Length: 110
Image (cartoon, rainbow, N blue to C red; front, top):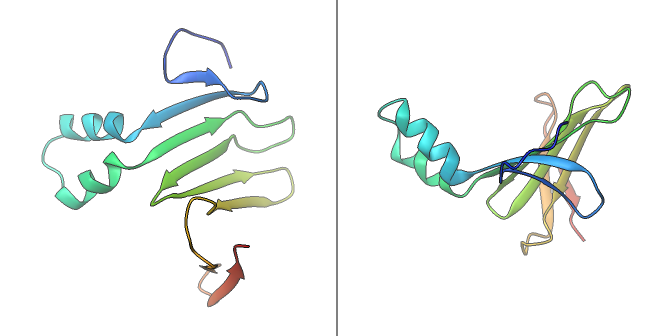
């Protein structure tokens, strides 16, 4: 990734370059498209999207979505799909997740 003076691009604490898009930017882009559902606008204003470059061999970049106080990261690596959920800013004790309609599985957060 090339460096730029764009405020949406910066280097994190470990030297990785990231691209970021915050909720206000998303809402502004959506508003240019015309009328949208007010509920979508509400969610988008609180959403942040970050993209980190993948490592050699990864099939995709690492994408992090921050919403509802939770960060969800996803990346298609060489041999698997990596999902990361960070709930440190919530008081949730469990994450209930489901893969391909196979039923919910509870995972403790602490």
